[in-house]
Length: 454
Image (cartoon, rainbow, N blue to C red; front, side):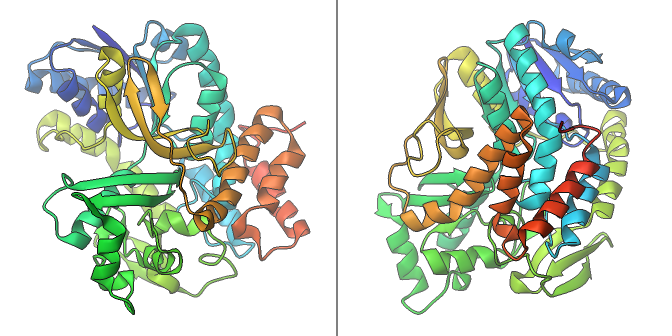
């Protein structure tokens, strides 16, 4: 039997990950522990699990639990997918910086909004790490929660468990390369990436045995732009759409492909979202209002639309249970494959967010970086990316440093270090130190339910 503990039984991620679990562990019985501060969610997922059992001919056990330590006891794997404070807290993450002319598009990773989200989530993850070390130190841990870099670093600093932070960026980047070259699938694409979650760069790639960047430059032409060959619009795993115009500007400037999701990438640089950029208002296909900035048409999903989507999730799961909606199919997420690779020593190469122990020599040690890694019975071991161009290192460095300082500042309750991360943030470059300080104090006040400084 394989014992799997979910910390957070969210109604968006969990139904799909359970299908991945039964698809990967076809011959093993599963004991699924569903730990959530919302017992209704855990109970609903347990009922959904009973339907998965019937339709997949299985006898897995689903147990809703309120006691985290009970859920972790004897766990072989732990899956974390939650958001401390929920959308009400996220609303403040976005609204407070906006008063200081910072237009956050997502607000979950970088910039003052990502800093705020990290401040309230890091203490929760530090407590998780303490329990993991004490109760199930050999369990494999996968984290899907943002800010991915800061929270994965918190886990890896606090416990000895093999753990990874996971994201869709690798898939989306290969999708873009596939579309540019008109390939039917990824089978001929070899790729090396380096950076941080939501701000990775393709350092090298090949199509078959041919240099990918040479082929890309030939396709674009001497006077052309990446815009000439990139698909005009793409949609990620969650359904968010990007026109990748900022991706094109960054490629045209630096000569390397960044992560193509402009909604995230824009929050790592100084020039896209700051200083009250010109905005436009639109409605999506479901009638939800959203804003975009005119530069690169970068979109922000309104928190109100997110709340509407969250309110629909119980009904969506009930539709699976009643049979009105077919169960989801296997995703292309690889977190469950990583668990199997570790438990059964089946080597697997994939992208992982890990503390920098030299895999990206030009970025700070112990900042959390995203590169390819090997997962097997020994755990998770990153692959060296030793030729990252210096301009890419320099554009990534501020946020790598900030993420490291934010984690250390929260864990040590060091106010000065926390504020140094804000002073250093590219999205704050238009602000004076006193303005940054006032914004930071407002964000700390909004988060005092979860984190208090002495």
